[in-house]
Amino acid sequence: MIDSEALIEKCDSRVEEILDELGIEYKHDNGWIRINCVFHENADGFNLKFRGHRWYCFSQCHDSFTTIDIVMKVLDMTFVEACKWLSSFLGLSSNEFAMDKEKQATREKLKYLKGFKKSKKKIEYIPISNEILNDVEDYHHPYIINRGYSDDVLSHFNVGYCRSGYLESRVVFPIDAPNGTTISLSGRAIEDDVEPRYMIVGDTSKGDTLYGISKISKDDDYIIVVEGFMGVMSLYEWGFHSVVALMGSDITENQLKILLKMARKVIVVLDNDKAGKRGSQKIYNHLYKFLPVVQIKLSDFTDDEKASPCEEDLGADLMLDLTDRLEEEINGTRQDTKWYSV
Image 1 (tube, one colour):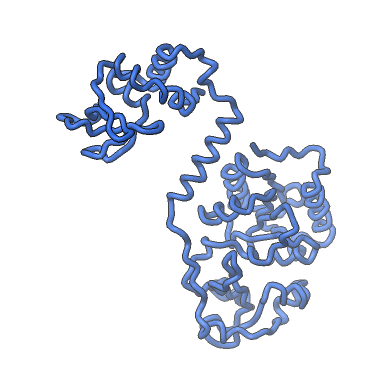
Image 2: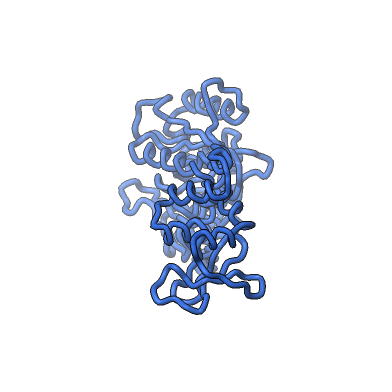
């Protein structure tokens, strides 16, 4: 892989010699080197300006270029041909503009993060209205208690109940922004035949945050990613205090950004169905170049495709096996695991 940025830097101190070799007229102007733009027709006025690695056209192109781009255009060369031409002209060996794997990985990471930054504007987390919040009672319905969750854990996650209002007759899970602001409420019907099973109200998309993100421990160097509310609470019951949920099987771009900003080891434990397996692989594919990340597959513990990482689904014995595996991954004591990161 050619390290084009290193080659461009080498060109800086000899850009005038390169222009002379290409037969391009130039002049100096307040620290700039100026030429007629070679990228659009009928260019005049020395409107392509050079300073510090890049050329800028303030006329028709309204774009920036490199010295490699200039060589490609003037000599009608490919990118590789232009790099070789410049290397030969500057008297560089091929090793001097070859990019090692570590540098390549770093460049890819920066490019990836810049792409995230440009892709969307800053998320605006809109607090949910008090009118809706006032319908939520600090009451732990037998439906959720009977599924094995203690009062302490339900209180920690502010799980409540709505007797009336938008989420009438539903157990309610508040969804927070990373800063702790409640932005949405998800209501789970207490009868399994009621549709929709989950109903979300609020002005901010659930894909803009991760369930449990405001509750994670600052002392942990890991974060466990699961699909649903129950997985977060169940693992919390078992002593893992840095667990978040996608609230689905597919991670969004904004959720990826949150994980990247946290810069912790990521352990992915999604559900055992096809959607969960696809979602787990997607998270891995997006993060492994930038963070230590590993997937734990529930198929290692059960054949039940409906299984999720909570005691209600796995039972106590398999849950113990899963939590032992999590401890091994967190502590780095598992022998056959490679934390893929660069």
